[in-house]
Length: 374
Ligand SMILES: [Zn+2]
Image (cartoon, rainbow, N blue to C red; front, side, top):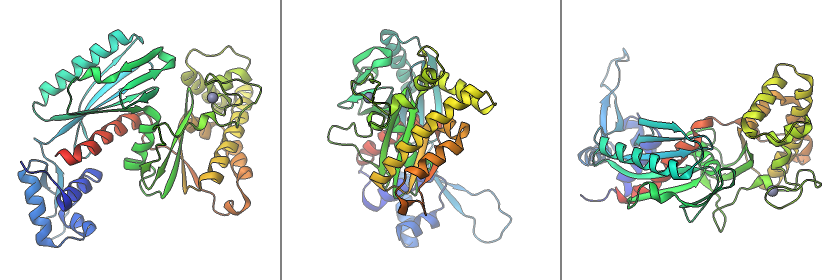
């Protein structure tokens, strides 16, 4: 089978980005004539990549519109998201729809997690026989060389993620926050942004810069560690080894410190509980929330001053913080902006994909690697 290239690939990617697109709209976006569009769609249908589906009756007259969607026998990618407490594996068709999901909690033992995932990969490959072309992995830590995971909170070190599918045609792995940002650029809040900053508070703070939807990755692929900029308290030492890190001044551990509580075992769920109490009027929780919202807003202003985005996406606990202390956050943000930026400050918006972000991003990474192989 010949590879799909050039205008046919562009059309396939347009449908992937916007499944259900009509043939006429796809032609318009790609600057194709009617004849060329018909020919290209025909090729993609023959290659079992796309199919055309009649539109539901609209009541209007004229020729029925036909929508372009994934072929029912077309390629499928697997997307795996590993979190601190569970894992989830989706089989995803072109266009991003999940056709099947396997999910299980885990107790953090890597010797148990990897074989369980490998078994699920095998089951889904058998279920979608011959159609599964690759696997993308979202992992809660630093991923080196696209495969070796260091997840300090799980005590996993140099774990080879490729072990869940040895010999895969395409297998990619990346950090969960990076993938959440990528997903917002492809299918979420940053689809139309020129330059977006993504800031995600989980255990600590991570982020990414999306330049025209593309991740700014850095020389070693680990750009975006905004949490380790010195916007925090210079008296405090971060687990990373630096002092004054921003991340430990705005996450669940910061809330615990302000409330005089012991460091929480799970800073994410602890932070969510405190911010819920803040919203429901608990004075101490509210004061703590407002203090970290101020520290957070100032840091975001610093990022905006430095990077000149048109959009800032808040993800993870940052969305809860925006709901719990919007006034304190906005005030600190605006006060930290250079004066000329205050007339038109970049919007702070919550992530659209939220918990689904890393999984969506993992699937997108596989499709990106797969395009030249289809
Ligand atoms: Zn640090």
